[in-house]
Length: 339
Image 1 (cartoon, rainbow, N blue to C red):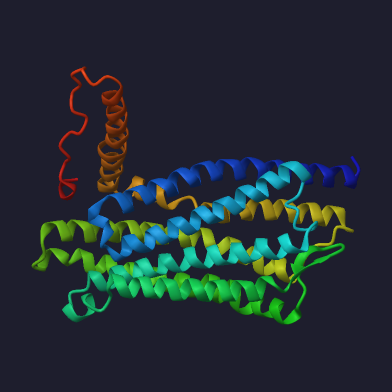
Image 2: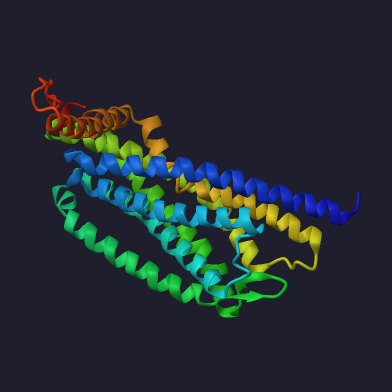
């Protein structure tokens, strides 16, 4: 078997792998992130909770990333590649949007961990330090930073004949190698999220001794456990992809070397699928490790969404057949605090 046929086989397998993983992660990602939004927006218990606000922002960012991901998947199914080598505008925009959503997701996880540390701290002045208003300002400022940073970085991407869409400015290559992937998108969020989530977990183990309402204690315990498990998954998924990106930025593979190029595309497909899990997994982490969250999801879907849809249908039937005796559609809601 010739090397060209082997390289073509690897390329074909990498393309098929990207397609299947792209469609599967998109399906699970949209379902999971939409359910996250429904739970954290619909339940009054979470509406004034700062950590729930950060998880909501993270879920929105994840959905945007999922839309970008499925766009790349569809383009790959049509053209055999992600079309970044065909359009300079798309080459730049793809990386700009990916960086904005990636940084937003990473640092919303950090904000969640930091917030839980302060909200579960036994010192009253530390608990009062973080407010929902402050959290909204911090999130807005960081997202503005992520947009400006990503536009500056993405603008330096260019299409080169044999390498495709790559960073063309040497200064930005050095920046991406020594700061962006290892520090800003790697070591810094990992250290912040890991440290504060562990400290928050330590705080919540002593929360029984404090004079707090039982509803508040249960909520702090639930969210702290959810954030800790999310941080563990985040660390495990972000490290291999960032290591790959540092290598790929410094050693882009030319298409003039078919075997090396095919292997690089195969590695790219594997590490991209690992990276995609970071934007899919939060809901499934929460529902696996939190029995209370499972009950809350069931409550929102059955008692809120289903009842609302049922009420709407009953209202339409009442207008069509006003003389029929129809049972009331709105049943008494369970108390959210007892979920």
